[in-house]
Image (cartoon, rainbow, N blue to C red):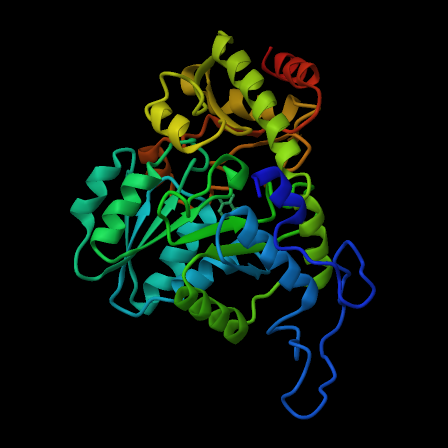
Length: 379
Ligand SMILES: *Cc1c(COP(=O)(O)O)cnc(C)c1O
């Protein structure tokens, strides 16, 4: 089955009760047992729920994995991966990553004795220098948030395999429509389903997908033991979102390209970050591991001016000033004061998340209306 067909049919079966084509919302906690311990496969909804199960099968299918594991948020999914580790273990993570991931690593897991090294991964072959006998996990986000850096997943996977280290890829920005990390050699794919996969800004959810049975069993154990599961109603909405992922992504990519090219030519814009530009430092890798370049575009205003950036995001009318990304509607954000405020200013400046940086999640509206809106806001 190819990707577009998988978004609609992948891992899905008719519901056994009445042949419902769409998996019903099983809003139930518990399931009657025939005799103690004998049941139809479901006993308690934290452990397993038919609606969530259908969604987990869909996740596995669209990421070319074997096992999908759904969580109540993207952060809960990342949290479950970190629970595979022991005190003393080390994690190598990209230094330009989602602020919430940075916060979870440094504010929660560091105090349980897990060590983190945040490094630039633009040159993936250099990751190897940072591996030692305690390294257990490499955490990669590509494209990165908010600077749209690209990390070479295939090269990173080879290094990880050589040292028997797990490689996890946060695939939230790319989605499986653009990039399938398991095919590139990663062990774990993670999603904030809240973003493109849900796609309609109406749910918060996370997912992991793996191929290996033992790894899946460990993660299902953590999912059930820690209990950060998602609800049946949200599972239904996510399944509905997945069915249009490919058509939405196609338009996100077209509009993202149009917006990036418009901003690049604008005299009042100093720098535009978008992996589709030929002079993007890792454009070649983006081209080889991604089908297209996505709908996320970041830029810096002329003279790196903070006030100018704030004015622009406030003047936008079609783009809404809001956190989050990946919905059908266009959003604008100011990372330094919003999504990345949890990273100290010193660290932010070092990695390029400067005070004048604006991040756009380009939606699927008409391209002309988006360009017109940017034109009036930037002046
Ligand atoms: C939003 C986001 C997360 C966290 O997901 P939630 O669903 O908000 O918990 C993790 N990684 C990336 C890249 C994100 O954009």
